[in-house]
Length: 215
Image (tube, rainbow, N blue to C red; front, side):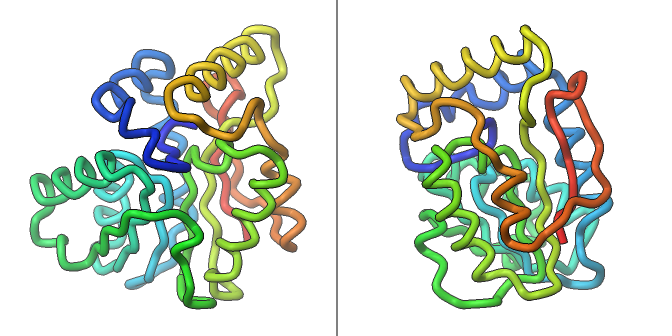
């Protein structure tokens, strides 16, 4: 749910989004993203789609690992997009021409089979099950047949405190941003429906978060 933007409603939380994430989860969410990128990025100079990337930390890590990559950074929140653009200009100005910033959603994607990799970090958890199915189908349509899908997100809770924490998170983000999801949707089931399977799986935050690469 963190780093996930279904609409411009996330403008309302942009100012404190990253500090809130660190307060609740420490470095766990960042570590999950780093793992997925380290084991899943295609070699060379891939053309990548990052959707719902929030304030842009993922950009810096991608460009550190793949300095020649080109990236479409698709973000529905204009304020989050502005923060990501400013971060890139400040931290890696030489890489600015390699990144196209676009305000929009998966509905903005029109070119089939365009990307060497799809990156969804804490994005797919935002949607109700029906909407999730539509989203993953639209994203899969712009993924080249052999392209990996890099995933980091929450997984079904196994303990009472995990269930409680997720319930609080969903209530908070429904009230502040208007997300459609009310509880964690069956993300892995929908990715499997596309014919994909998970590799390089690793759990974080006492098993509540998973990073993996779907191929």
